[in-house]
Length: 330
Image (cartoon, one colour):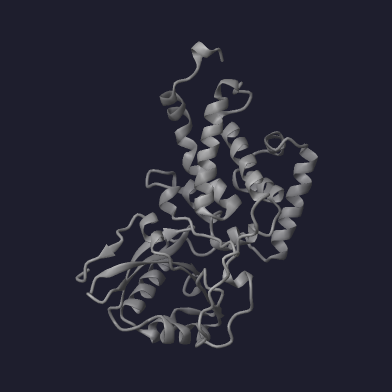
């Protein structure tokens, strides 16, 4: 494009902005970190703006942006270690009364992704459902076991549904190499027992009921009610603490002894994180005000909670779109 025809910043933004949310989801799937994903999306748009005059439209604008974003993620992955959850580090604690152990600073933790950042109420329901299933925590954790190249090919083919030829062009490789890499990536996920069936969708009545019961149990400090809705193989993990717990009885005893506190100590509000039912959590301060604590992401079957992943950093409350504090009367 000759200099006099260079697109204006406003026109560039109008053309590329519709893809920002899906690119954020893609970079998050690749990296397992919202902060890193946001940085890489920003870098993608900067690179696209700088080279837009050389975009020859041999592919769609969307495909071109995915090419830039994917390769930027692959470069970033060369300098980063595997992101993990506590259950990917050590064995579960054998006692519910164990003190939670803080991890060393060199561990890179898998982080959550609030759905509000990548979906909206106006989106097609089928598209939202597919996006949520591809963002569940178990899948993102499993992707960390793949090489960057395997991760990229699997996501581009199985999640974004690019053809093998399109992926080959995106990654500057051959169609044969794409098919081989995809086969190895799928086999690796199979070994990790990551199934196509994810947790109950967060908008189902069953998931909403379990979330409501979970929140009520905490707010009322009702250990019996909480134990009732836990699966026999339930897991609780709380990054950045390395300590985690497994088994219905152990988890229930840990919650009763170390988490529930007194009635009224907690206030919770429903949300959706990583395509799963989740609770934004507040803890009562000395003056009776409820201060942001973090988020709890639930993995559920139709009638039981199988995993509770607590991200106990107050900033996640704001990133989910909620206030940093609640009045004592809420």
